[in-house]
Image 1 (cartoon, one colour):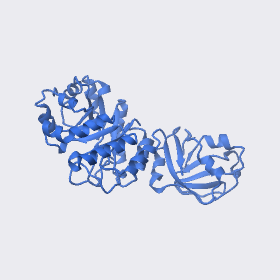
Image 2 (cartoon, one colour):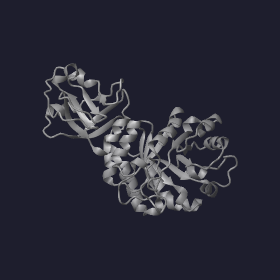
Image 3 (cartoon, one colour):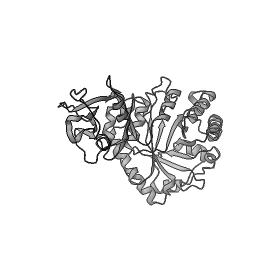
Image 4 (tube, one colour):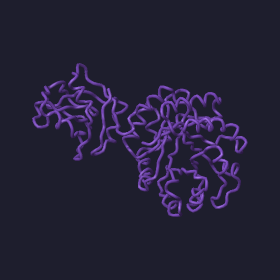
Length: 364
């Protein structure tokens, strides 16, 4: 995970409110700013007036700025471009680092556009299951200037399915290109570029989840580089919480069973990784049996097992004693397994992202 980012829609709030949001997010380590010019007055004067002070402050705070444009905006700001040869000097003047567009130009035209003399990167639409970018690269677009970004979806039930998202993203991962996607605030103040905004996630399954859970899902999948909050305004509490999420490994929030001893809690703070030989019933870990084989692990809370339970094999399991596991299915407990906690309901689905050999941890 390279960067966290926010989105701002200047026409939807006062300059003071937008600047305060920029400063709050910067304080918590956010590095990318997404602005949609689709709702702007389509002229250099209008954009300079409405967006200029915000983009100036963003550059002062160290943000990498991406602007979403369409054909109307490009013609109004840059004039008639021939064969992708638009004059991007205005964007350079405004401090724009990335132009995101989905204008339907040919692969050769897009390659010309990407080879602009100002070093402005170009972000193409990732939410299509076609390998369009292969043609753009083949036409000479420099790979370091090509990025991909998924769409966001303000209408409830219209976000991408996980299966479709994965197929689209795999195309970009194959080319080793930088990728981005959106998560959504749960704030009641959320807004976007259009009158209707039921949140602005990329994945429909994320729409009503805690914002930290959405980010953890992307961390676990490990296929997206930059995660942007699609709607404004996330709360300060959400910004702070996102800044504290481990961006390297997935940490699952667990509820421990009552009466759990400090010894068990210490075990659950160990660095853990999934064994490479997988099965359908458990995520088995490598480390527990290595470090706990001499420990006395008495039977405790050996109740039947539910999906999402955190398990530690007790003394009765012989050579398996100390193995830490996550249950993938409901199972009968033979009495040789201690159920020591359960992954928070909102995060149980995250266990499906833990791949063989992948590290993970627990939070409680």
